[in-house]
Length: 199
Image 1 (cartoon, one colour):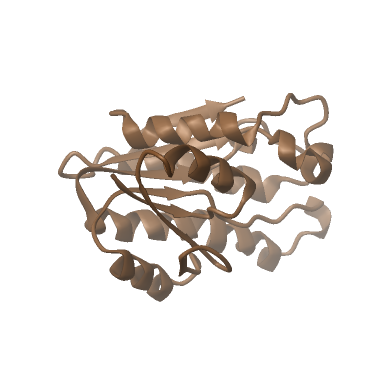
Image 2 (cartoon, helix red, strand yellow):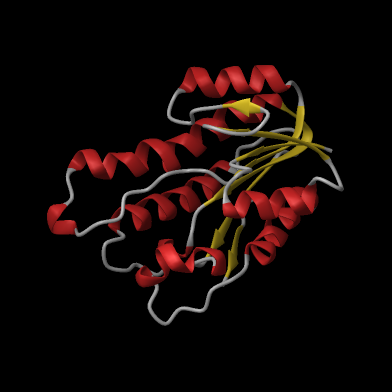
């Protein structure tokens, strides 16, 4: 299969690439790295990427920025970062990408455990992740031609504990390699409208 992976240089993206590259034709893209450049906050950039890579069998997104910080100090502009980048960025990709997929193709987006386990200073992340999961569940019902749409929702990564561990006190972490298996399941499997939680 020909698979477009956005965010291949990130921790999760590297795990996905290591797993899928030996099995499929992998095309990588990112804001600052990869074979192609894309800014998910811009519709024209998403469209240009999809035009450049041509017909696909799968689209995988492991990208998206969020804002973490105390609610009492949070501005609407800061909150909008997650809405425009991780939420609408991946929605843009799914809406445009459905028209570039071959019959039976799949789209896999990324949310996170904060969708169901809210924590302090993570109101933006909880909102965005929960909205992504709701979008995928509803959108999967309408996709034609056997197309599929799923979301992978990992807990904190072992590799990211030095940066994000303080947001997840007492939580068990998972490796990027283990998270990557959920993306393989989405790409190579048959299910749709699912949230694959890796905890």
